[in-house]
Length: 196
Image (cartoon, rainbow, N blue to C red; front, side):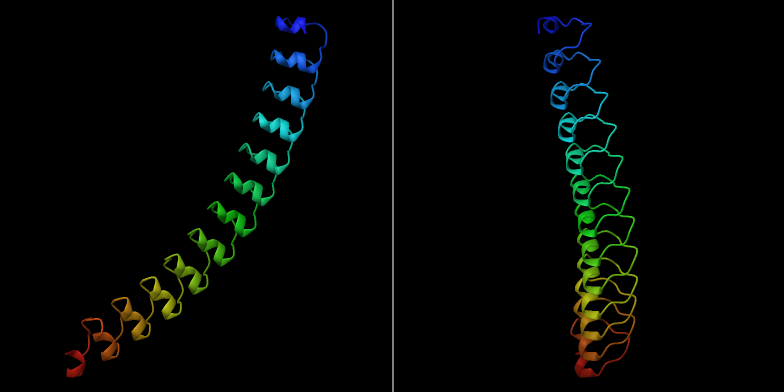
């Protein structure tokens, strides 16, 4: 105790607590709690919780929760929930829900609902309802009601009522009543009563 209170480099080994109270780099391995209480970079592996409480980059793999609580980039694959709680870009594929909670661009295809909840531009076609809930311009044809609910300019012709409810300029001719209900100037001639 007295030796270390002066910060003298001793030639013998002291108890861990005393050594570390002065931040001296010891030549022996101490118990994890004592070592980390001083932020000393140990040359041995300590228990995960203790090591990570100091944010020390260790050479061993810790439990997922502990590692990620400090935002450290681990060299191993962690459970999906742990990894994504930190928004770390993992090198493996996680279940869809966990991945998308962080808006991470995954390297795999997820279930439709999960993908669209994050507004991620998927590389595949989703069911109409899911796709349109995010206002995506789909590359496939959806049911009329679903496409028009989002005001998406579709590349196909819909039945008149749905198309006109959005005021979309269609590329086909609609029945007179439906066209005129929206004041759209049709490209065809209607009966007088309908037009007027």
